[in-house]
Amino acid sequence: MCDTESPAQSGIVVRPGLRFETMNVPSSPPIHLSVWALSDIGCVRENNEDAFAFDQSLGVYVVCDGMGGLDSGEVASSRAVAAILSSFESTAQTDATVNSRLLMAIYAANRDVIEVAAVPPLKGMGTTAVAAALDGNRLLIANVGDSRAYLIDNGDCGQITIDHSYINELIRNGTLNVETAASADLEAIQSIITRAIGIEAEVEPDIFTVDLHPGAAVLLTTDGLTRHVQAQEIAAVFAAVEPNLVCASLIQLAKERGGHDNITCMLLVCLPA
Image (tube, rainbow, N blue to C red; front, top):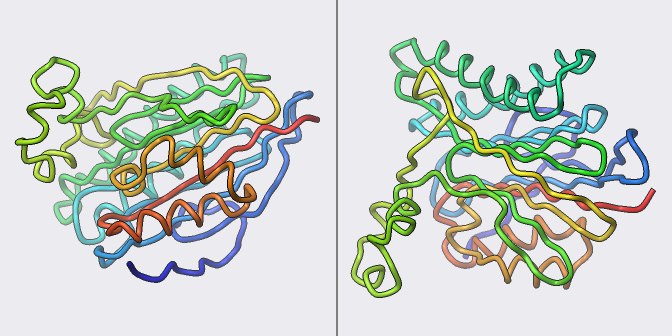
């Protein structure tokens, strides 16, 4: 177990380790979202390669988990977050649907990270991404890699996204099951992802849709949390503490169980107008 950092408070940024207070989306009634986000270096890593940001006026929310080692992962995640927000803003006054704008934002992030990674010290860097965009009374969620989105509703918590990871591919094709998992070297393969931003010229995000209603919540998070905390534990924490304490409580729980990676959580809570 190690101590939780006390991040500073600020506005919209793409740097990890900052916390935002509740704000309401000034858009289509009768749905409003309140958002809290927190990032922590964890107990093992020497730097934080996660990044997150959101823009309430645009209704867009992003969490990324960089990879590449040293400072490269930080560069990839921060660039991707910034590119997604910038692209989403640039299409705000167009006729494009929210779904199309979200896809274009992911594509823009992929191009940006690839371009920056052309410099030898940054070669090979990339990042996962999970991004959500408000579309009326729906939330559209795009993911690349193994950063996840969860729906918390009526005391339950279910994973919305599907991991783009080697271990998930083994589970889906039947190679890995309850019996074989016991003897598999999961530690060696759990960090291998099969899709990422900035690795290939073309990226293939998945898009999911969640119908919003007051009381429901969506959690965007990196695998630094999900390696240690299960879905129903997320639901239990959400039920036990005030919304503004959920992210900190989840991060502390992951750190008590080892905190082997950076941990980032962003909680979106649906409120009545």
